[in-house]
Amino acid sequence: MTLDARIAQLSDADARRLLLTLTRPLAEAPERTTPPDAALVQALTATFGAPATTAPPDEGDLARAALRLLAADPATAPRLTALLDGPRPERFIDTNTIALTTAVLLALQLHVRIKRKDGQWELLIEKPSMSGTVLKPLVDKLVAFLSRGG
Image 1: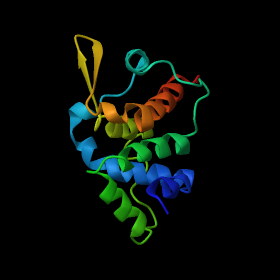
Image 2 (image 1 turned 90 degrees about the vertical axis):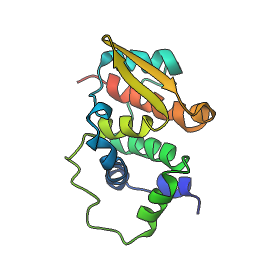
Image 3 (image 1 turned 180 degrees about the horizontal axis):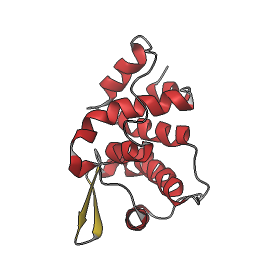
Image 4 (image 1 turned 180 degrees about the vertical axis):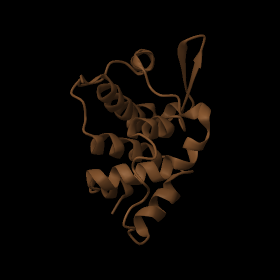
């Protein structure tokens, strides 16, 4: 079974926990955990275009999209595979440790340099070959998720 198929079969809770587990080490760098805001949503939309749908995804769909991005990266795919192949822990990590949107942004930052300069967000796609296959769908889901009402 392909890694993508395995990701697709994850429950919402397992997808979220797995993403949080993979991105937790990245969360230790404070410059990578800037909370998202409306300006970031605008910068993502300006860089990647408007999402195909404005319906916000559920947390599981957003987490699976981020896991697909991580699976496409040769540096993180082996860790993802090891977590999927290993014994299933009761919990990967405390899911309250970092927010889902922070985990998605951490995964995204492995491929897109995101920084704030003079109050403006700057985005630089570091791996353009991935932009259409797994990066754009993740950004679409993230923008819709961050733009949801309430």
